[in-house]
Image (tube, rainbow, N blue to C red; front, top):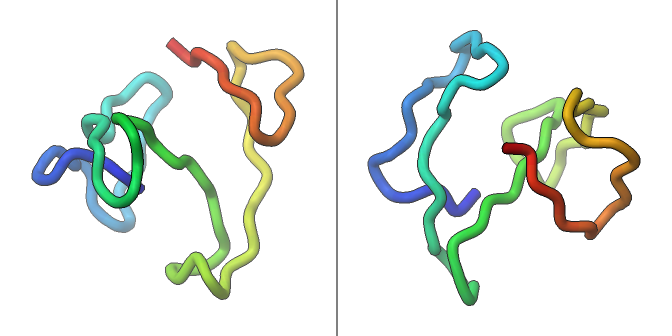
Length: 71
């Protein structure tokens, strides 16, 4: 969510590799600055889907709501 309009580089069903750019940060919606929401889910509609587990190799202990740099 909140990617810059027109910047998305992938489509549904594409395979992506670690480090591949998916898009550019934007500032859409009711927000105070550019940011991104990242979530894996088991269906296309976030309001009905369950979240799926994920792992970042370059981030240690991560708790919900904590900021981190995955760069």
